[in-house]
Image 1 (cartoon, rainbow, N blue to C red):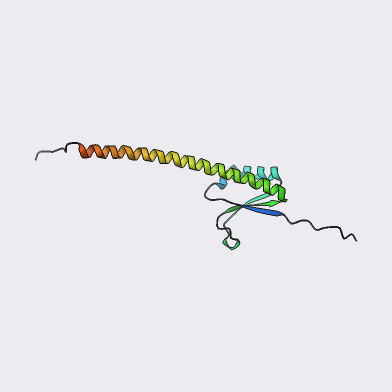
Image 2: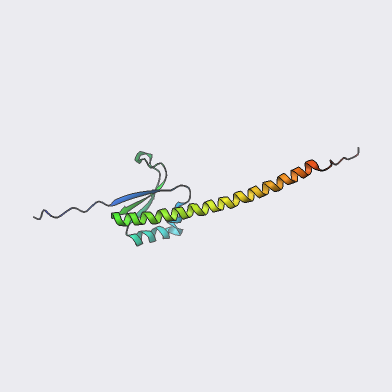
Length: 123
């Protein structure tokens, strides 16, 4: 009997939290992106619900496999989430700028109404 045989190392795991719909950037249409990431890095990636008992108060991706591959995959997941958040911020900024412009136009109309002579209709 050989005492040098070792049991398989349990998989290394890493969690990457996300909020909102940013997970869709990682999952992709019909799961294609997450499947591609799993194949590229040789890891298992699952979207998990928040679990306060594990001190994970927001949804997260659980990435499992050998340590090196998991860490590289987690960098890619972080990158995709950051890209999604950046796009969201850009969209929100554009909407905010449009609302500001609309408000300025409405204020100008109200100011014009306040300074224009009132219309008097005879009885």
